[in-house]
Length: 141
Image (cartoon, one colour):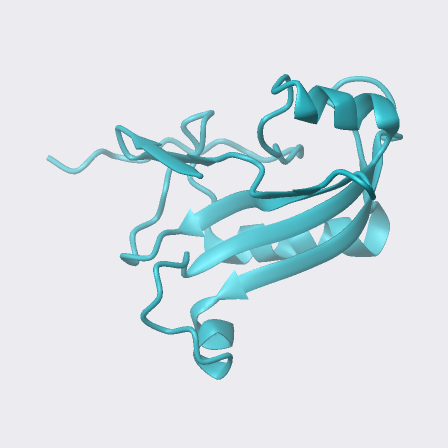
């Protein structure tokens, strides 16, 4: 489920397979279906190229999930990752649908403890972790 407030968009975990402890959803969005760059919960904008680079780096070098950016990354293992962009959507015949133009969709098989927190609503969405240099942007007048 998407929620938008003041130019910020968030997505709850979109799909759950309880029998297999699988969770799926958007890790991050860069450009919405209207072609506008979106702001994340930390009020950051992630350029499409940077999001794509981060997504591919995660798949190549990590693939493990942590929980709330704390402790070890031993709460789940990546089972699905798809970097969405307008070119791929066009090739798939999905242009014109209300899908983001640039976003990172993923899925994890999570630990029993983590899955219980998902079911209880304590963990509602994915959050990417990384390091970057914050660069202030000028607001349009």
